Image 1: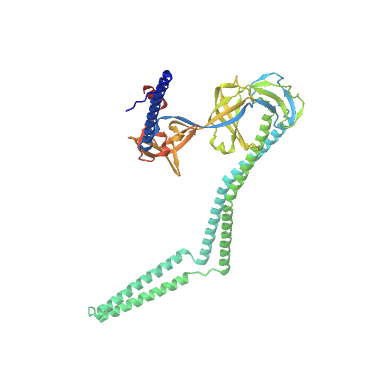
Image 2: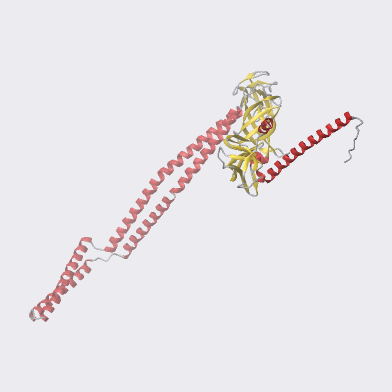
Length: 500
C-alpha cells in the first residue's frame, strides 16, 4: 500500500481553518436543535385541544351612565325692573350704586285712577252681594208660601165637593140614615125568613115537619117582603129632590176650586227656578270680586320692588316720567351664583330630568370639577341643531366661577351602586343571543346575560353573580364544553423566562 504524504505549506493557517469549521458545525447543530424544539412546541399547541384564554373574576362596583354636554357659565342675576302697567312714576327711592335687598321698595307708580276704580269695584261687589241675599231669602221663603197656597186650595176643593154632595143628597142626613137603617133591617129580616122558608121546605119534604108549618113560614116570608118594600118606599119618600140650579152652582164651585188648586201647584213647580236665580246672583258676586281683585293687584303692582338682592347699576328713571308696560326703571346686578347652561341634543333629552346630578369641568380650572344638579329644562329647542338649553345649578365655586367661562358637563343619567362590571370584550353577541363564557372546572360554559350601562370599555352585566371566572379574551374560538386553561400574565411569562 502506497502512502501519499502531503506537505502543508502553512500549518498555522490550516489548523485555524480547521478549528473554525468545527466551531461552525457545532453552532449549526445547536441552532437546528432549537428550531426543532420550537417546531415541536408549535405542533403541540396547534394540536392541543385545551384552549388558552384570559379570565377575570366578577365583582361588583359602581358604574354610571353619563351624557357629555358642552356649554358655558351664565347668570340670571342681571335684572331690569319695570312696571307691569303703563303709567307715571310717582317716586324713586334708589340711586346708582345703591345696595338693595330682595323685596325692597325701589319706586312707586301713580295710582289715583286705580283708587277710583277700586271704589267702583267695591260698590259693584256690595250691590251684587245684596242681590244674592235677596235671591237667597226668596228661595228660602217662597216654598213655604207656595206650600200654604196649595194646602189652602186643596181645602177649598174639599169644601166645594162637600157642598155639592150635600146638594146632591137632598134631605137631612139623620132622616136618610134612619130610612137607610129601616131598609137594611127589613132586608135582613127578609133574608132570614127566606132562609127559614127553604129550611122548612126541606124538613116538610123529609116528613120531619107537618105541612101546616110550611104554610106558616110562607106567611112569615110574605110579611117580611112587604115590610122590606115599605121600607124602600119610605126611603124614597124621605129623599128630597134638590133644584137643578142649586146643583149647577155647587158643581161650578167645585170646578173653580180645582182650578185654584192647579194654579197653586203650578206656582209650586216654579220654586226650582229660584235656585237658578241664586246661582246667577252668586256668579255675579264672584265676577265683581274678581274685578276688584284685578284692580287691587294693579295697585300692588304699582309698588316696584327688588326681585333679588344686588346693586343698582346705572341711573334709574326719574320720577314724573310716563313709562309703558315693561319699560326699564331700575337695573340690578345680583349677588347670586352662576349656573352652567348646557346644550343637550333632542334625541338625548329624555334622559335628563330636573334633579339629575352633573359633574361640571371648567376650562379655566382644569385641576378640579364642580358638582351640580339639573334645575330647569327649556321646552323650546334652538332652531339650529335642535339643541335644548339645560340649566345646571352649581353647588360651590360661587367666588371662583365667572359668567362666560366655557365648560363641559357629564350628566349622570343613570347610576348603579353595586353592578357586575366586565370588559366589553367579555360579552359575546351571536344573533339575538347575548352571553359570556365562564370557566368551571376547566371547561367553558355559556351563561346568558343582559347588558346595562356602558362606560368607556366597561359594561354592566346583568344575570351573573359575583365570584365567577369569566373569559375576557379568546372566547371567539371556543364553544360550550371546550377545555380551557388560563393564560399566564406577561409578568408570569417573564418570571418563567428568567427562571429558564
